[in-house]
Every structure is written in structure tokens, then in C-alpha cells.
Length: 253
Image 1 (cartoon, rainbow, N blue to C red):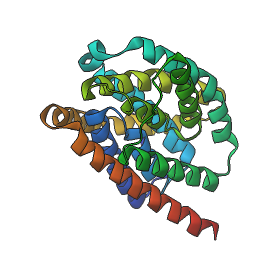
Image 2: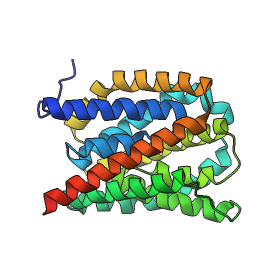
Image 3: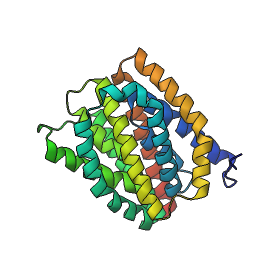
């Protein structure tokens, strides 16, 4: 039996379970959003490093759960360019994670989520046509964001939603990218000795909630339009980010 971490209070557990459930549902439905929701909510009550490490483990697990349903829709050439850029950017992000003050890291997480979600909600788009160079550049930015705050999917989501892909193809792209990106992120975190046995234990205990949320989100994806839930998810991200910013500013005073 995997031991349950004994440093979590009832309040911490309530916030973390709610954040994971919402994030898993978002992941099952749209293919992205889980990292932002889980890390933003968990960082309110626990160490940001723990939030990032556990989330990366859960993202990999979610990708495995969804692999069969999206495999045929994945644009592998584009994914390869994004991953190539992410390999360059991830070490920079991991260095930031290992050396930044905790409260500064929490504020960075919250600001990143708020800005990215607001851009997506406002219909942000890239006017130039996607090519190999700018696709790889987005990968670099994603690697930095993923290694430092575990939010590498949002830059890619911004980039992909600027194109004309169908929701099904967009969802498949993000799921495949997350799987490869998060494996890279965990490798670099392991080199920095940031993973920890207690974080792995917490990830294992989180799997049932993850599986249920992903399954429910996937069923929802088959029965409604992506735009409606996308708007709801982004509004939730912005609310969590604002709460995180206010909490960090109060702590710093």
C-alpha cells in the first residue's frame, strides 16, 4: 500500500481535490487546462514545486488514458517541431524553478495564467502563417513555462487556436504534445533532485480522481461544442489566478 502524505490538512486536501477534479475534467474535455487549474489551486495551499512535480506526473498519466482515442488525429510533424523547441527551453525553466523564491514563483504562476487565459478568452490570434521557425519558437517558450511553472501547454494552446484546426485535431495535438513535453520536464526535474518520494506518493493517490475527471470530460467532449466549455475553463483559470495574486501580495506585505 502506497503511504499517504501526512503533511496535508483537511483544508489543504479539500482545495487540492477540488482543483484536481476541475483540472481533470478540463483535460478530458479540451486536452489542456489541467496544469493551469491544478498548479494555480494547489499553489494556494502547498509548495509550488510539489504542485508542478505532481501535475507533470498526472499529465503523463492522462495522456496515456487518452492515447487511443486521439492517436489518428495527431499532426506529428508539428508536434516534433514543438518538442524540439521545448527541449531547448525546459532546462531554463527548471533552473528558475529550483532557484526562485517560493512567493515569487507563486506570483509568476498566477500572472502567467491570468494573462494567457485572458488572451485566449479575448480571441487572441497570430496573424502570421505558422511555419517551422515560429512553431519551434513557441516550443522554446513552452519549455521555459513548463519547466518553471508547469504551464507549458498554454503557450501551445494560444498558438494552435490561432490556426484553423478542428477542435478534434486541436485536442489531439495538445494531448500528444503534453505527453512528450512532460516526460522531458520530469527528466530535468529528476536531475535537479526535485521529484521526491512524497510527491510520487501523492501522484499515485491522485490517480482515481484524475481517471474519473478525464472520463467525464471525454464524455462531455463527445456531446457538446468545445467553445462553451473552453470559455468556462478560461474564466475559471482567471478567477484562480486573481485569487493567487491577491494571496501572494498579502503574504508579502
